[in-house]
Length: 308
Image (cartoon, rainbow, N blue to C red):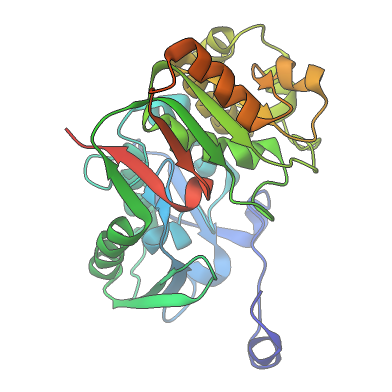
């Protein structure tokens, strides 16, 4: 990740959110709970955050203070950050900073300790750096977010009855958990009760580890799944991705072309499809051949949004 030259010159510390012994209290969250951050970060003489900025399906954009929180935080704080109320807020969405409750938590908890400098970049589809945004953590991040919106988001004048999406190929389409991001991008412009056709290999399954698969399988419908997650006191790792999938399904039908077994796709509240083109043709037969279709060939790499 850092390359041999950095590894040879610098001491690297891998953060483990579950090991409270490696952390120290940094302050209190907006709801009054103690936030713990990695001991090395808390005790550092100078603090610099590195990262890259792209649209993010909950926090509006990645980068900035997100490289501090939840990046080097304790698991309890991370779980509160991903609570159902925050994730389910319609303002917790792609390309939005102002009024975004998810981003607000990032900024509050990430700034509990002084941060001296920010180095953020934006990337193109070839993973080449397109621009640097350096300086004050908030000012640099906001400048980078403006540039990212101009270059990685597309305004649409109306919703579409059919949207075709991917999860941008390898390595992003290895499992269904990550593929929710491509579906979420499509959901931004799909008409209510419309149809999303998603293509993602999912050769790593759901994946098998974590709670995502069991959460989907344990409930008979997207509504039942959402009701369980939104129940007072419910807290389970990976609930946020299942919650977002349920919200997408309540808005639109979703077909998935993948390597997952068809029955497992159905149990995940999705329609297994063998061919995206055939699925789209079926929808056009129903809607009329002049019905508009949106295509997101790179899934969550270019995010559409509706303008009023």
